[in-house]
Image (cartoon, rainbow, N blue to C red):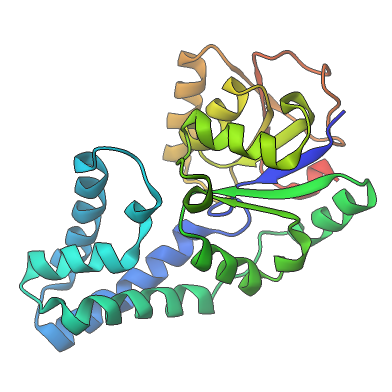
Length: 253
């Protein structure tokens, strides 16, 4: 039986990709008006910085997600004085993003249903803890989460095994009694399965291109994608080589 459900946060409990794009546009325009930089070049610098920070880091750690660190790098790249502009840009980024956040459809009903079934509810997310707390508060489910686990706390980043082993230890149940729900095949689904959990792949926030790439990766790892539209599964209801796929939380109430 499933005794605990652990959710990823970004692109799982709310649509990060959509809100992120809504934030970058005004930031790029502001950078143009205040610093005289090209908006397209500013946006490109953001993604270049993100990619190179991950590529050049000797190991995975929560600081890779810090917008203050990222905008420090962007300012250096674009000849913008780092102080105070990097901190100002980071604050603006989060202020705008948090302002528009809404939960994915039926998330709150799902949380209530899980509580009624006496199923533990956890959050398992990469990122620094403070901003993830703010997101939960903004989308209105802060008080629904019993177990809050970030990569900053665990000292491991998804998809590292250490993160998932930390989740198992903190929840205090067997791995096969945990259902991990997330959008990312690399960071959420495959490592959850590898560490003995059940996994459910949530795709409502993903582009068709991301979905197809993830399906290909699942196939390469010899997993079958199963559509699921019923109550939460019991352990043993499906083969370990399967990944449950949903695009609406209502389907698992």
